[in-house]
Image (cartoon, rainbow over all chains, first blue to last red; front, side, top):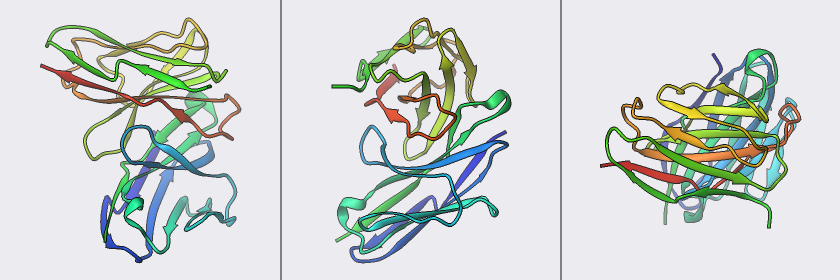
Length: 114
Length: 114
């Protein structure tokens, strides 16, 4: 069974802090790992990672994948109150009977105080 | 404008009744997914479909049913067999290129059993 585990489950920080969110996975036929931000309803896409060691960056957010150790991290520097959200990690399975299955983790609830 | 439309946004159901949630996309995506989200948690996969007339059970399929008669549409029926149906339901779609693509989400349907 495909499994995606995120940690911590919740995190409270102050503006300006740097946070690291973790995502580990067990997937029989890994294809890609996705990060999403969910503020109210629909999750919005942040990053897609397919290769180990290549950092993806977008402003204050960055992410990297380690396919040997089966995990990814999402870093947010100089946090702002607008970063408060649920951050979701998901993994695509590209083989066998689970072909095309997109499995999400439990999410990390990030709260940034002014 | 291309996108995914879920309807209705809010739905109330009496215990023992079946109810169908609509999901329509005009992105020309082959793959579609249904997720359930409980308060403060991640997304759990109910069903997914890679092509018309074919779909697979996700991790929590019991008490739910789907159909995929058209590429654009992937309705979800919550049956009376689902013991705890009150939740937020999200539909997503993506290109069917074996995982090298993000998934796009609808705005969700909040189902409440009264």
